[in-house]
Length: 415
Image (tube, rainbow, N blue to C red):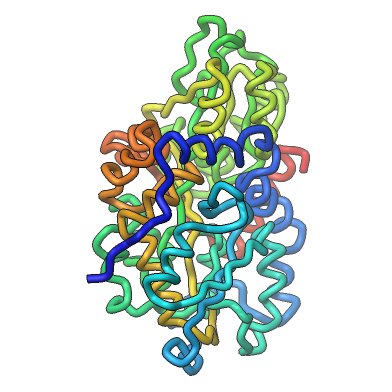
């Protein structure tokens, strides 16, 4: 059996390196770049891009289009990812897990962090995919709502289960059955993204916060509450608080959630809707409490003793960034081998130690503890059973729903 041979730093060194590349730049993280795209850009014309090109924006696909697989002849794979979404060495110039993969397999990874925005990247690859041409990429990482669209359009390929034994065995149960890709036929999660409530203990000064209702209804928090500019997170968390299932809500449920948020805007309860810039409001105390992304909270807690988080009893929203093989990829088998590699406990743990998002791989806790014990015991990185049980996904939307919902949400937030 092939063995994972990591460039493993000491636990203390791993934590120090991770902090050195994350501390002080919270306003420019994976979340700020991603979430800016999921709302306004889509409402402003992302769906129109499809219809304007004569491409259906909805409809179930039967699968993507393969090309001649050159994986055996060409020992390489082209991997496009988001910025700062991979482990790095002390210099910040190399990626230890990718280097270990190449040493083991002989497959060179042409790794590029050229995804800065979902809609922008979609616009970049859409002309080639629509024309039935290759994109020059074998593996891409897209957020679940765009991954769902790519599958509907038939622009990504079905994965070969025989090349994914670790992925199939080790995928966390909470990520196995998204409604947009049942059974993970086309995708595997790169990382999970949890939305929780973060708070500043000093700013709360003894005020109890346990739920979204507290954010919206407690007059002592007026003008000191933040919600997110990402529709699925803000509305999803509000739906949960109202006793509605984000996986099965109706138009009336959505409108009721928006109306509840609008009341908070009109009364001044909600200070503002933010992207990742809530981090500065929270640490300064301008926000006493707000919706937040777990990957940010991990770092904020490390940097500020006043910041902490809670998971409402009603549950929390989890989304995913996903690995997909686009149509006409030249090295599909090599891409599948790379996907499967990141579902081995060793590489998965090393990745989790550096980027601090929700690890979608079961069985990594002991391995991660050897690198960073604090990370291994953090439920925002390795969810325990209680954390997994509270996870809820926002359901897939039709093209018509997506446009209508985003328009209503844009009016709410003033986007």
